[in-house]
Structure formats: structure tokens, C-alpha cells
Figure (cartoon, chains in turn blue, orange, brown, cyan):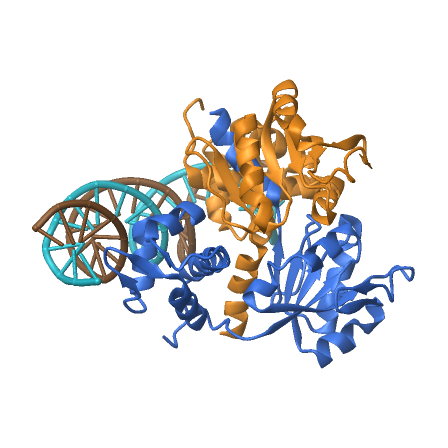
Amino acid sequence: MTERLGGGVAARLAHYLQVLTQAKKAGRSAITSHEISEYTHVNATQIRRDLSGFGTFGKRGVGYSVEALIGEISKILRTAGQHNIVLVGAGRLGLAIAETDVFADHGFSIVAIVDSDPAKQGLPCGPITVQSPDDLARIVDEQQVIVGVVAVPASAAQSVADDLVRSGVRIVFNYSGALIDVPADVTVHTTSPAVELLYALYFHLA
Amino acid sequence: MTERLGGGVAARLAHYLQVLTQAKKAGRSAITSHEISEYTHVNATQIRRDLSGFGTFGKRGVGYSVEALIGEISKILRTAGQHNIVLVGAGRLGLAIAETDVFADHGFSIVAIVDSDPAKQGLPCGPITVQSPDDLARIVDEQQVIVGVVAVPASAAQSVADDLVRSGVRIVFNYSGALIDVPADVTVHTTSPAVELLYALYFHLA
DNA sequence: TAGATTGTTAATCGATTAACAATC
DNA sequence: TAGATTGTTAATCGATTAACAATC
């Protein structure tokens, strides 16, 4: 189990974890591979094989315990524990992201929000207040932040990403839609809802 | 070209289209398979093969014309043209989504926003005003809406999805994070940014 | 017991990778 | 011409699918 997982397996396990977390919040105590398959669009046999590679977590005729499986996958992905995020952009999008618990559900905590607009600095947002981008390096260092979320207009995205990388962030999560370049040792993920929509549309029109 | 594409190819083509659209907005006129690969994390050879199956779009030694390739892929995916969206939820998240042009960039137009809170109904949001959920069926019918976007709290998501499906929407785009059930002939996509974050984190910790 | 679902095998299919000639 | 990148082939790897015994 100390060996590194392949990219495919790791991605699928993360997806199962998301579904299980939501199922738990909805009050479910057990779930079958077929149900996970419906929500993830991953083949049910594949799901069972992915899981059985690490142990026998299921009960034949019943399915998997939601709670127990969350624990097992967290252990496999080594993502249990607390991870800190800094959010850049206190506009509508940034505040909307800060408000949801999509990140909190998985142990990610938004420890700081920054915005270059002085009018927004000092404003409260939940338990924290908006700070200046000048504080980024200090925040990342003091709070051991590894993830930076970019929630600014496309035109400012590259420059914000550069700031984040300079400040020591290792993973950039980009909501702006713009293409962003970073050094090879930093990971960028750009959210692109339109991609899924184009895909779904193709099969509905065909 | 009249035959239906496999799911893998269609998903990748949609992703290329997203990158090309952003590249065009950034003023790029040409792009190589290696650059598309950097932004999509799809293997460059795979990209060239995907494209060459439909024609010879590239120039050896140069790459692909961004503009021309956007046209070709739009033709292949048959997604050129205008498609209408109705957005449910005029909270921070809903308004943030309405504000961005991630959807508009690909010809999707948000033709209506509805919210069950009477205090929000009538409020302006760009060129339109917030309406009541009671108007959903009429809106979907009159404006030929095929996509419904769910931007409400998780606790209300299933009920909103039910309303949308009853009103005739064929594709549900769920930003709430909650698990949603719909009839077999309707497609749901649930955005889950945390999945990508868990995945990226795994490889950074390992 | 009967019904359901897991765990697992074998066969097929699609994606990835390396390599390289063609050509801009 | 020289350098770069496409288009394409062949070999490997991983995902999907069908089938079914094991067992809850």
C-alpha cells in the first residue's frame, strides 16, 4: 500500500469518496456498487475491482458501509487530516465558493481570502476577513497553505497564479476559465463546466 | 461522420474546444498538440489521432489554426448554434454563474433565472429579471430550454431537479454537490471540485 | 431458502506510449 | 536547408464488459 497508485485509480477513488461523503450527508448508511456507478458514471465492476484491490470492504447481498468505506478510501488516498486553502478574489464567485462546504466536506479549510481591491479588504466573510494580496507569502508560510484558489476575472488570472506560485502554493485551482501557465512542479486545475455541457449536449442531439 | 462518436472521443473533443476557445480569447492564432496536451492532460499523440480521424487540420512544423480548429470541432460535435439554459437559484452562487461567460463562450445563453424567494423575484440580473419557479414550465416550453442549472443549497437540490425535469429540461447541471436522482432519459452532471483537489493532493503528498 | 450483491476471472475494447517518416 | 510538428503505425497498458461462483 506504500506504492503510488496509477492516475486512473486515484481519480476514481477520489470520485467515490465524493459520492460517499454526499451519501453520508443524505443519511445513507449503505450503498451498492451500482448506485456509486450511477452517480460517478464509472462501471460497477470496475468499482468493485478498484476497492477489492485494497481489502474486502463489501458485504455480499448488501453493499458497502458508507461510513467504513469513507474511512478506507481516505486512508488509501492519505487525504485524511486538515489541508489549508487560500482564496484569491472576494467578488461574487469568490464569496460563493467561500460559502459552500464542497471543500470543507473533505477537510479543506479556507484560511484566508485576499483581494486587490482596497474597498474589499477588511470586510468580514464568515470567520475571516478579506486581506491584501501583499500578505499572500506570509499567509502561505504561516498557515502551511498548499492550495490556492483563483476566483478572479480571466484577465487577472495569470498574474494571480504567478503571485500564488511565488508565495509557495503547490496546487492552483483556477475558476476563471483562462489558460494559466505554471512551473512544472506546480499543479493547475482549471474548472470548465462548459466541457461537460458540450459533452452532454452531443448525446442529446445525436 | 453521421455515426455517433464514442464517449471518450466526444469528451476529449469538448475539452479541446474549451482550450481552443480560451486560447482564441487570449489572442493566440496557432497552437500545437503539445500545448493542448499541457492544458487538457490528454496525451499529445492521442490528440493528433483524435483530430486526424476527421480530416487533416494541422500544418506540420507549425501546429493547428486555433480559429479553424474551433470550427471543425464544433461541426463534429454539432454544438454550433444557440442553446438555452434556465438557472435556478439567485443567491451568490447563481448570480456568480450568471455573471461569468463560461457558458456564453460556447453558445449557451442563460435565458431565465428563477428563485423561490419572493424577495428576489423581480430583481434585475444583467439583461433579465429573477422570476418565480411557477413560471418554469412556461419558460422551458416557450424558449426551448434543454439545460437546467441547479444553484441552490444541497437540501433543496432534489426538489429543484424534480421541478426542472417536470418542466421538460433534458440536462441537469448540478452545482449543489448533493446527489440527485432523475429519470433515465435525463442527464445529470454534478460538479465536484473537491474531487480534483483530492486527486492533486494525493500526488503532491506521495 | 431465495434474492441480491460482492469478488474475481477471461475476453474485448480503447488509451497510452514510443518511434519515425512526411512535410511545413 | 534545418528545425519543428504533424500524421500514422505497432506494442503495451489499462478500462470495460459479460459471466458467474461465493456468500450475505
